[in-house]
Image (cartoon, rainbow, N blue to C red):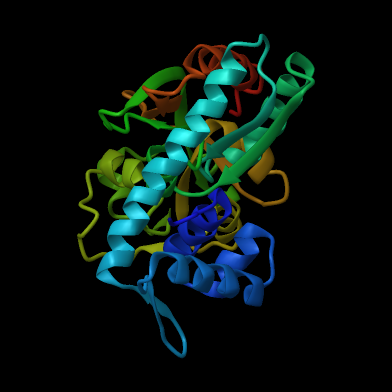
Length: 302
């Protein structure tokens, strides 16, 4: 009789996700030799090889691929059982894994953490900042409970709760402060600084300027809004940033900001969670707290 433990499953899931023993071990907070031993023990229990071990990387065997999918389903179900128990005993408490996109996290998350700590003193908040697609994948696979993203995400398995809208703000060199604010057609002819591919805000900015993401252009890219604003301050070009980022990102940069002409570009910030989540009721309450934190932090930047 095979005797697998949840520990075996969680360690294998980490290895399947990271594709690397070192990163998986770090994720599981154990040593790499210990993780390797656990995976070998799992394979011995199954009597089959799950992992091809190369000099620099690992690959899952065909059985390993199928096994990884079933393991993700099992772990998600186990986590939902724990959530079901939590949902039945009163105020939200224990671990809450919340994802946040990078163009929101630095500006909204501090207020959200403070508000949630005041409302739910027994809550163990586990935030994670990364791009939208990774957050959605982690949600669907049970590695996150909820996420704060730009809507819509259009994933049938997720509930979307809109929270608030915010404008895109134009950031340009200080000497441009008195010049007319460019319209989308004019922006297309300027050197536009954008976030790297993978950020939804990049796609939204391109859409406003009516540019195809695949269009060959002399675009400059940065890994963060802070980098983009500093590049504008150095005279390299102009950029668009979300309204909530203006106060923080322009504090240490010599730039000017301006609202764009009507119709102004907007994005909708919202929360998403699995429709099957036993915590759906509590997450709706968390969403209202996030909404209030977002509205409280907005101030007219220009």
